[in-house]
Image (cartoon, rainbow, N blue to C red; front, side):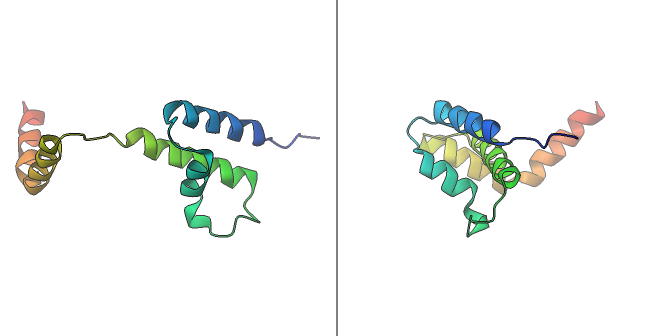
Length: 95
């Protein structure tokens, strides 16, 4: 008989990894944010819990801090000129 997967150790390992990457965040913040859209957690399976934490970690990994006002202004400016950026990118691809 095939043994069912155990998600518990993977969940703990992922929480440890999140703690290493974001030591100022408490465990409650990680869990609450990761599982925010689930509402009542009573019936959330370990598999769903792990999936939510993995998704949350990917979001955290992609979240790059922008500390200066210059960085933020550059992002806004680039956003306002996306058409130009895409045109430049297409020109580079053709070369």
